[in-house]
Structures are given as C-alpha cells and as structure tokens.
Length: 167
Image (tube, rainbow, N blue to C red; front, side, top):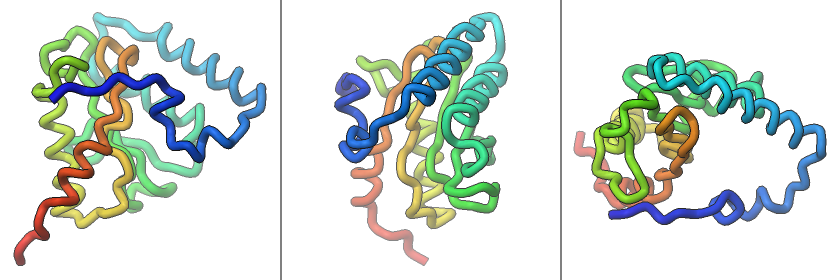
C-alpha cells in the first residue's frame, strides 16, 4: 500500500477552503512555521522535536482551547478540549530526524512508526471506546518536521469495519 501524495489544498476539508484567513493570521503562521523549521536539529533527540511540534501547534491554533501532551505511549495527542480528561482527537507519532528506518515514507508505510499509529488508534477506539477520534497521525514527522502525512482516513475506514469487541 502506497500513500497518495496530495498538495495542501486538495488534502483540506472543503469547508476550510471557504474560510478566508486574515493577513495577520497568515503572517503569524508563516513566522511560527519558519521558527519550527529553523530549530530542527538532526543531532537532537525525538523528545526535542516533539516539543518543537507541540509548541508550533499551540502557538498557531490550539492553545488555549485544546490540550496537547503525551498520553501513555503516544508521542503527542491533541485532546478535544482544554483538559487531559477530554477525549483524544489527534494522535501524532514522531521519530528522531535521523531515524529514517522507523518512520513511514510515501513509498513504504510498512514501518514501525505506522504500526505504532495503528496500535494507538485501536487502543483509543476499542479499549477507551473513543469514537470521537477524528484523525490519526494528522502530523507525522520525518527528518524533523519537514515531511507530514495524514493517514487517518485510511485507517479509520478499516477500523470502522472491525466488529465490536465481545464482552
């Protein structure tokens, strides 16, 4: 199974395309994105890069309305609300920039990073009974934060076909 490469415009929900951002928001987003990319350091750890991504997400949109942190073995999650008690909406898997073997690539998704995303999604869906999880791996990091994949829709379609867990 190979990933289909989409440009940002075609990957966005069509409802977002109808919203016209103001120039100030665009400039703010650009500044934070440049800061994120400038701070990528291939000699630093996975934890360092997770913190960069977390700060970027908080500054550009999510803070203070959505809580972002780790959850269990999940590298980063975005909750549906302001508290850690709120259900998980997005799971983010990150790897150290030099760890290219474990992170998925467009031509190969059969990697540890992808397997972890599927496992974390299924834990949320089956064990925690979280049917509010909207996207899985909305942002996956490879080579710092330079490559991002949205694999949520494909996994969600497969997971929705799973029979309910027997009690």
